Length: 92
Length: 118
Length: 153
Image 1 (cartoon, chains in turn orange, yellow, blue):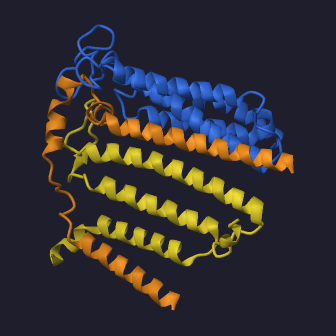
Image 2 (cartoon, one colour):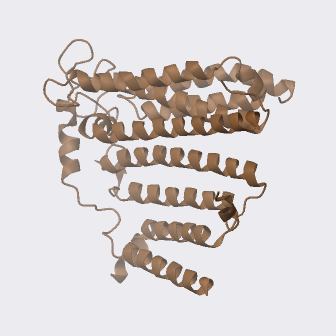
Image 3 (cartoon, rainbow over the protein chains, first blue to last red):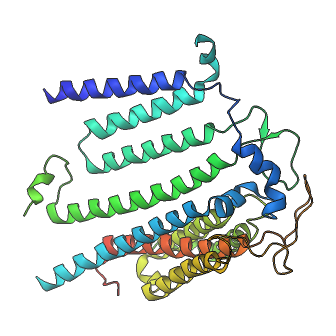
């Protein structure tokens, strides 16, 4: 019984994905209004030759702040989990 | 719609990758194989983000000694960098929990993990 | 601990990996690269040393308190540069035009100048330190847990 429901769910999801892939825009011509402004005005406003670094740290800096927080939380979680196991093994 | 099929091959490759990853997550029992399925899912999403912003005959969006041609869109590349780092953090935390489960139970099987309630 | 040939070659090879990673971090505003990519390169060099020498040897040089100080320092540099431009908005680029890191490059393709970029090279340095310390601490904790039963203080 569970096998039949699992196969049904999988085939429905893959059918939706393939239908979405065939209905997207043609491959080499994306719609771009915001990026044309960023390519044209990036050297005058941010004084930078690298447009990707200017987008990451100047135009969209809050996303980089959120990612630094996620990295910090993951390192704290890993080091905390490895300390709790040692203390429990040494007590018992 | 039928005339776009020879040129939309990268999007069909993304659908294939996500389909294989969903098959692994639903049908396999070993915990390490489920973690590998989640890693393949992250790779498929990163490929989708990069191929969304490609211009035909494009070069990298950097102004130092550029060759001739139009520039590729820079915003999807910045989003892909963030997504890769978040994927690394999630996989590190999952592998830590798999190691703890093996130390407690002595066997990694996803159907027997309900015995850890206590 | 692996054989003597692997240990000798790893000793000579770690210097080139460190110089290459620092070059990618510091020139992040002229060439492709930046903070995250250079930090990943140097962290892979540290993983090579852990595989060649064993985690017991590396534990005597890289203590956990030193790594946590480096990571917190990198995060504080990043947040400090964001708060320093608080006169206008939160992430304002206040060093454009001043002689420290200002200097506007000419429009169009050009050979790159190093003293441009505003606040961005300092933020690259902070994020690079954070990624190096974070990834090295994760791999060192996993290697110590699975091989010997040493306590990581």
